[in-house]
Length: 267
Image 1 (spheres, rainbow, N blue to C red):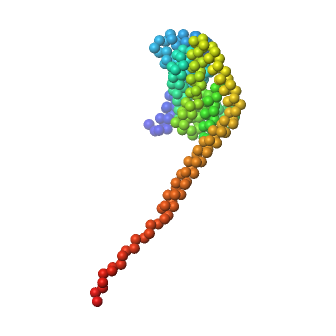
Image 2: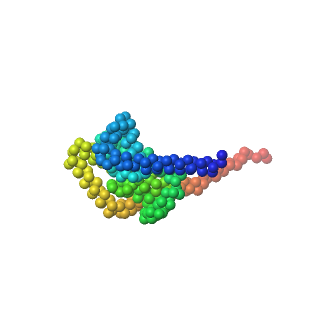
């Protein structure tokens, strides 16, 4: 079968799979809403699944990223509420990586046209950053770092750019991990009714959101300049190395003069 035909068949199969997933989501949406209506309901449902509890929680996190009908912070806080700070952070991070990988690679290899049209319809203002990898990388990091901002759509957006997978997932983890841990700690303290600590964490998150939202442009410019300076220094070092190498090569070694035949001539 030709390569183009294989791609068409794969796209059709994945399209049918996506349609099936959407149909199932619509069908089970009322039950999902009921489960997520409160932390206690969510906790009771996860525990009712027994040993499958962690997997079910991770599936909720994946669903939240890929389909995004549920605010990410709710699942993150619920992770701490159900499993405590450490395990809650771990399960949330696992779900984050898997869900982001599904969204990222689906968009990059299959759904590029669909996601691109969707973003154009929404008239996203920061779409211009996509054409500058340095600025876009800084934008991603700042957006992931600020709590409370919608982040899941950025996974689809990043897949439309030339950013490498390693760079993207590194930015994703470094940017999101601090608030995943903070959200899990918040949920854990709420479950243990340690409201003072929970309020402190919530206040820090709110202050972080306010300052991050106000100064996000300045922070982005700062990180962009820092990245540019590092690249400039690396380029300068490379040029200097090449110049030194060229200089050494240009200095020709003195030619070897063959000694003349000094043997006495026969008279």
